[in-house]
Length: 402
Image (cartoon, rainbow, N blue to C red; front, side):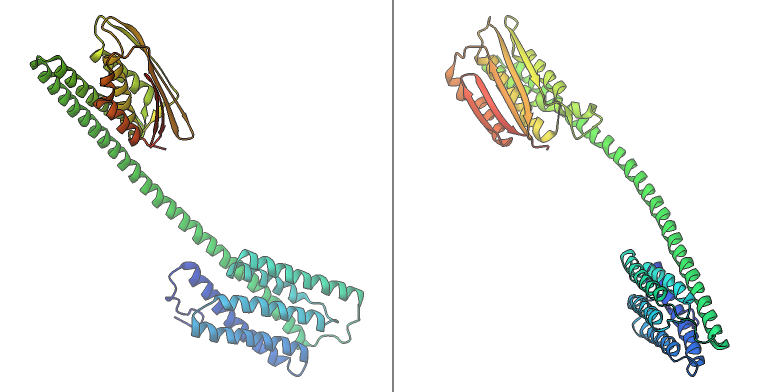
């Protein structure tokens, strides 16, 4: 550590270290140069002495402040404000000289505030100093005075030193700005590389998880089918037709859930299922299980709901299963021909289900049994409402997956 290389370990960020080091080095340089300039002009040019000595005080107090507080932001403000003020004083007190050095200092102040503070602050000092220059040129050009005396050797050297210092400050600030930009670019490249690596890990894990989830759905489907097979075996051992019917209803309820897991296993997108395909298979399974050989019953199904998630499709599939099962069992005679109509639409995250059959319900006491009770429970599960007129149902259901 040296006088021009102070300790910056109290900062963790590279830019903070750079800005603190920038203000420290410039403060030391300004204090030294302006002390020499003010001493050399103390008996030659009183106004110039006052301006140089003020600049020396600002720089010297900046060194003390930086050493005590380790904070640099206030230094950027004091240098930008103090420098702009001293330039304005020089413009309007030294009317019989050409202000070469001041223009370099204006550029330095704008860069200094832009790098150390913010873009908006830099633009403010650009406007402030630009206005100061404009007023000076207007006032100076309209009140041109001849130079009363030639500059002394000491004054000429002072102006030259000032110009060189201003140019050095411009070059140093630009160099520091490029360092900050280069560091930011390197950090951006490093962060992008880390993000790319993390993204590759996430993609790999996501693919593995998708395979595992699909395998789970596949095993759940297999287990449910095993249960269906066991129920079918037991149903063949009983002689009561009513018991066989109960077995068939239970198997169909399980099959409706098994079909969903089968669809999820086949789908690329695990969050949604092809609803049309699922419901068509479910309808075929219900027809195969309950429609007798001497019956001719068809299902007219149309849906606007093409994709759906588990929260909605499981209860919706069970609901349609119960409605169709009840219709086939109670609405049609053994040799009757009929049609079941299902219409599904969706609007504003609401599913409208219209269900009806062309049969004639022959057993009204069955309409209040377990199947109808289950329809009410499933409607409630879907946060829905049910209106019924005979064998026509109008459901308004919530899409729980949106």
